Image (cartoon, rainbow, N blue to C red; front, side, top):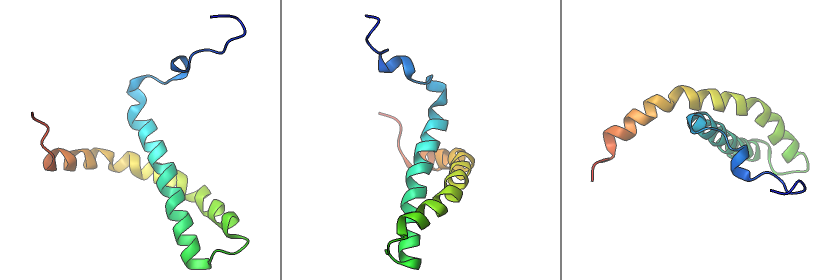
Length: 88
Protein backbone atom coordinates (compact mmCIF):
# COMPACT_ATOMS: atom_id res chain seq x y z
CA UNK A 1 0.00 0.00 0.00
CA UNK A 2 1.38 3.37 -0.93
CA UNK A 3 1.30 6.21 1.60
CA UNK A 4 -1.11 8.18 -0.57
CA UNK A 5 -3.66 5.38 -0.97
CA UNK A 6 -6.51 4.96 1.47
CA UNK A 7 -6.93 1.86 3.67
CA UNK A 8 -8.97 -0.98 2.23
CA UNK A 9 -12.67 -0.94 3.12
CA UNK A 10 -12.42 -4.27 4.96
CA UNK A 11 -10.06 -2.63 7.41
CA UNK A 12 -12.89 -0.37 8.55
CA UNK A 13 -15.47 -3.12 8.96
CA UNK A 14 -16.72 -4.18 12.37
CA UNK A 15 -16.22 -7.68 13.73
CA UNK A 16 -18.98 -10.17 12.90
CA UNK A 17 -20.08 -10.31 16.55
CA UNK A 18 -21.67 -6.89 15.95
CA UNK A 19 -23.99 -8.17 13.20
CA UNK A 20 -27.14 -8.20 15.40
CA UNK A 21 -26.56 -4.63 16.58
CA UNK A 22 -25.67 -3.28 13.14
CA UNK A 23 -28.66 -5.06 11.62
CA UNK A 24 -30.94 -3.58 14.29
CA UNK A 25 -29.51 -0.11 13.72
CA UNK A 26 -29.97 -0.18 9.94
CA UNK A 27 -33.42 -1.76 10.24
CA UNK A 28 -34.48 0.87 12.78
CA UNK A 29 -33.11 3.71 10.63
CA UNK A 30 -34.96 2.62 7.52
CA UNK A 31 -38.24 1.61 9.13
CA UNK A 32 -38.44 4.69 11.37
CA UNK A 33 -37.84 6.98 8.40
CA UNK A 34 -40.44 5.22 6.25
CA UNK A 35 -43.01 5.24 9.05
CA UNK A 36 -42.36 8.88 9.97
CA UNK A 37 -42.59 9.97 6.35
CA UNK A 38 -45.85 8.08 5.85
CA UNK A 39 -47.56 9.10 9.08
CA UNK A 40 -46.52 12.77 8.85
CA UNK A 41 -47.74 12.90 5.25
CA UNK A 42 -51.08 11.32 6.07
CA UNK A 43 -51.66 13.37 9.22
CA UNK A 44 -50.42 16.81 8.17
CA UNK A 45 -50.01 16.74 4.39
CA UNK A 46 -47.12 17.20 1.99
CA UNK A 47 -46.62 20.96 2.13
CA UNK A 48 -43.43 23.05 2.40
CA UNK A 49 -42.74 22.01 6.03
CA UNK A 50 -43.12 18.30 5.36
CA UNK A 51 -39.45 17.25 5.63
CA UNK A 52 -38.95 19.41 8.71
CA UNK A 53 -41.83 17.64 10.45
CA UNK A 54 -40.57 14.23 9.27
CA UNK A 55 -37.09 14.88 10.67
CA UNK A 56 -38.54 16.15 13.94
CA UNK A 57 -40.58 12.95 14.35
CA UNK A 58 -37.59 10.85 13.22
CA UNK A 59 -35.39 12.20 16.00
CA UNK A 60 -37.73 10.53 18.50
CA UNK A 61 -38.63 7.49 16.42
CA UNK A 62 -35.10 6.30 15.60
CA UNK A 63 -33.89 5.57 19.16
CA UNK A 64 -37.26 4.05 20.06
CA UNK A 65 -37.21 1.84 16.95
CA UNK A 66 -33.62 0.74 17.65
CA UNK A 67 -34.46 -0.28 21.22
CA UNK A 68 -37.58 -2.09 20.05
CA UNK A 69 -35.70 -4.04 17.38
CA UNK A 70 -33.04 -5.04 19.92
CA UNK A 71 -35.70 -6.20 22.41
CA UNK A 72 -37.91 -8.15 19.98
CA UNK A 73 -35.07 -9.71 17.92
CA UNK A 74 -34.77 -12.89 20.05
CA UNK A 75 -38.52 -13.44 19.89
CA UNK A 76 -38.58 -12.90 16.13
CA UNK A 77 -35.66 -15.31 15.67
CA UNK A 78 -37.64 -17.97 17.56
CA UNK A 79 -40.71 -17.33 15.40
CA UNK A 80 -38.58 -17.71 12.27
CA UNK A 81 -37.11 -20.96 13.59
CA UNK A 82 -40.63 -22.28 14.22
CA UNK A 83 -41.89 -21.41 10.76
CA UNK A 84 -38.93 -21.98 8.41
CA UNK A 85 -37.20 -25.28 7.54
CA UNK A 86 -33.49 -24.96 8.15
CA UNK A 87 -32.57 -28.52 7.13
CA UNK A 88 -31.51 -29.57 3.64
